Length: 317
Image (cartoon, rainbow, N blue to C red):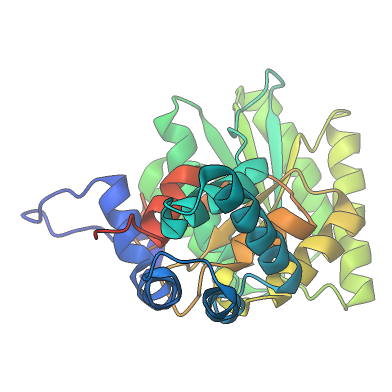
């Protein structure tokens, strides 16, 4: 019924995460690597190559600021390495260096229950990502409880309810009413039942909707009343297909509720992947997880070099 329950047919060979990541980033990789090969295939870093590369990076949603930083780093590495160095190799290293600030292992602290609040705009894949994240946490040996804070969208509650039923995960929900009250009840229930982690879903909202952003702040305050140190993590789910608008979302939600991490979804769609570099350059909130598919295990922790390897494969000539 919902995409986070999709799985490969029983007789399908199990692909590694690296293979799924490369497959998910195929569209992004084909566009970017082709343009990079055209720009740098001559192995010279002249003005023409730099202009072509700049165009390719901007088309990949890297953004003006991050593109300028990448090109400056590439030129510095080329000067240091000498004219015989392959600029395609140097570009990969520069991109890894730019993404490195986003790479921070996502860990569950000692607090119990450990409360993770999730936010995002409508359609970003937030509720689906919560289902996948719950499964990932269970894989770490942790018990999970879901708080359906989107009290007005029936589909969101249904998704979480189906997840709970199929995987033995308790869901605290109510139709209508105050989302913050649901959060308070969920934390109380988790404490009483000895649950390790609470995943607190919130209604999708645009950062320009002032009253909804105020409600998000209220939810954060109520979680702190239910558990003084909560929320222990605040994750923003971002759809990579929104391009540079994703960067604006990160800035707005961080200002409103203080983000501790990001979940970037739908990198297997029409996204060009470069927005990750833009975020790293202009607002480097740690990228906790990336999603590159619809299967339950297609949400994994972010690793900069692994991502670059999938997005911009090594030169073959």
